[in-house]
Image (cartoon, rainbow, N blue to C red):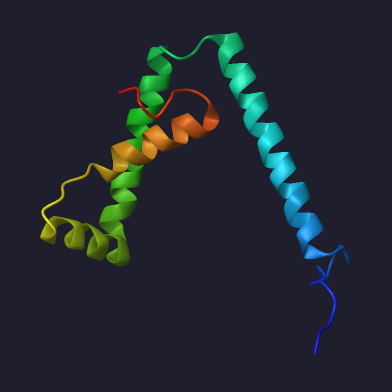
Amino acid sequence: MQTGPSIHPVTRKPKTVRAERDHVKEQFELKRLKRQAEQLEIRDDPAVDLLLSRIAKRVDQLITDDAEAQAYVGLLNDLGREYNLAQRAAKILAARSGLRSESQP
């Protein structure tokens, strides 16, 4: 029975410390990407639109090839909801990278 904090087997540090450090790194990277996007002013770049459309096509293909994803899409359809999941995924990825806000088309 373990009484202390969970220890990561490789780093030998408490897992909570590692999780906090990973979160800080992720936030730093997100800020860096946002600054970079602002500096490059790529918010309305046609190349970004092309990349987002390719990402959407790839996500759509992944959904098509995955039985579990197909089951979820089927459930959404049965509920009378229609979503373009691939397009939504591309928008979320763009928002996470700082390229676009989620409210932009």
